[in-house]
Length: 505
Image (tube, rainbow, N blue to C red; front, side, top):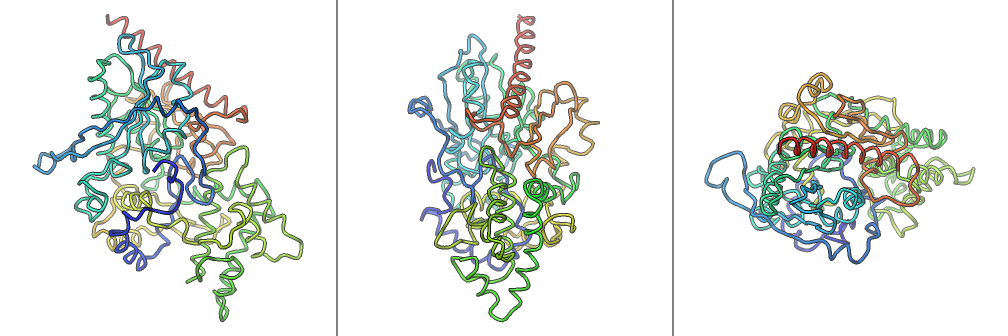
């Protein structure tokens, strides 16, 4: 992956099993699969073109290992004992050593290969020297080089092989790797802090709840653990997208809001789709007005979700829309916004967000099994046309793809989520739930302290996972303070742990 991670292209090795998937996908409604994907880094129009700037020595400090991971942690059938090679990467540069009981910062990989995270998840590397910490990055099963069954083609073949692909297996993987590393390094007294962002942030919080004997604490960045089973409002995500745009520019918000009906009006004309294709310079002829609307929807959602300083993509889009000449009509303004955020291109690929990349295919399975995030445009209160999330239709679509049904209630059954303030303060501890309120997924995040050690750290202007990205000289003070607060909380956990350890001795 490495530098090609942010590209929408995929290698030829994927083609043998992507072709049937593409054929099947064309027969399935796209509407219910338009749930914005999670992930610490943008991978669409805004995709991070380059990794964070690091010294050449950084890569020399990284050492790659493979652990013989158990396929199935929860059954005792013969096939459960099969193993696969799970990749993890370690950086010993700043570690104070096992004798000193120096800590371990464990980054929990999510729905993507690990490579991009090694340099773009800056929180662990930025704070390693201060804590004398060993860094370990663990790749999520079924992504990158951590593929069961010997090949991606076999692993993603059908529900029989995909059945081992879920969050419970993933955090059990992390537990096994961490126990293996601690034993190998004789580091039984080294406290572990797990760190993750987005879906990985959910995994980090759930790991602390399920494996408190392994992880002293967790930093869960932009983790929408309440966006399941109707705990958070369905409209929450797109309400914040709308709020972000409206705060940036009222006229921009109004232009976007009225553009959808204008697209439908043009599309209904004879040769209307050809007109739209020409006006938006699409790379292929539009097959429906939904295709264009879905594309623009994804752009606006991504701009809001990753609305990072110093560029602030929402502002970029709105400057493009508002900067058009006074005679420019609504769709002309929308196109100017597209050009502003995507750059001048010979054509614009409306399928850009839906190509069957490794992450797209993996996350689609995860959505169709347990990660059922009921996100939709439920009312007219947003700048989008109403498009409620329809669970029955979603289940039917997943059945068409995999011949299995999603389990929309499983996450809350297995990890909890309801009455979180009432329940978690009784038994849970040492989790930081960090959020930026400009992130649409913060609508499903924990935004209030639950106890003295289950804390919510958020900033009004922050975006998705911004706090765990590399620090920059240009960072605004509110972001500097958010990270500082997180570091101080983790230090407090460490101090108490070392005091308890000394008293035991």
